[in-house]
Length: 386
View 1 (cartoon, rainbow, N blue to C red):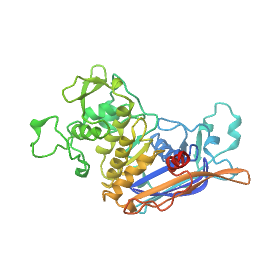
View 2 (spheres, rainbow, N blue to C red):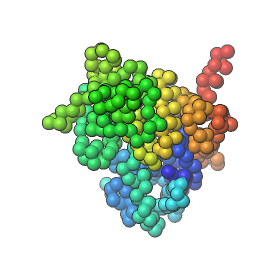
View 3 (cartoon, rainbow, N blue to C red):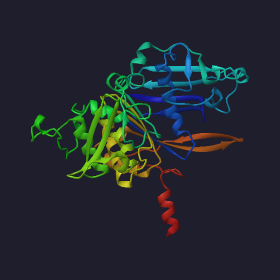
View 4 (cartoon, rainbow, N blue to C red):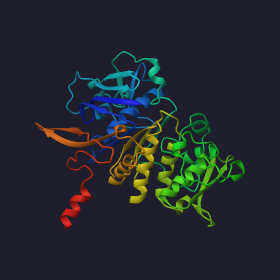
């Protein structure tokens, strides 16, 4: 797992070190730097996947993330001679440091590829670092703008069967679920207590099913009670169809059951299909969910972190936070395995910068400090009403 990340002259950060735990939650007002933390990790992975990080540099635009030009990536107050850099320390003590330089004169060269690239300006890191989960197949990114409900979903043998991935926008989630439907989940701790087997002939009725499809259905029931899943691949057309039903009801298209179901599906699939030391980055897990569903997803992600999966969440939802607090309060996740970071914008001598406050959570789920703006809007509104 990642233990810490240091950002130097990157976007709103002059120099910022952030601690990571099995579950790390990033919160704050809009445009304060939460996404920039995830973007740093994604830029490293993206550049490695293109075969350029080790010797060449940082690719700013690609399948995972699009930053824009080099000027967009660099801290506004940086000097010409300053470098942009990332340093990651993993829990096993391995450290990777990447420094990149930016030549300002390339801005004047129209359509120059250099404007979308930062050149490596440090010694290459150890090759063993590129075997870790940030760079290998044990990685999932559930971005904020993931694919919405579709009558038919794409299939990809490349991405799913070989890459073990859900797709850059989770567009292959249904194909992934179809391909691994009868595969047992890796962590029995994640088994839902009310799971039902959809293929009873393969299981002892007295033994709960660990099949991925059954576990996904059971956890989906926490969001929308009674939800069952029907998947029908059409390999001739490289398409797969997912429909939902409730008890003995008819089948409903994904487009007729609401965005919340489709947006939640990749989170549940990614968690249940993850091995130990997998990294999952999740943006806005609360999207399109009612408050109870948000709280349950918070608990579910906390449970994943207790199984050795590293979860990094960017959220604006107090219900997600409270779901995590409930998991800690219930003894499902140790308080020392939770890291909270709150991002707030400050200004000094006319220069805007981001300050990070990191509250702590105790074994009862209580938080030791609540800086202004840290999930306190409901309380402020109620006070105003009273």
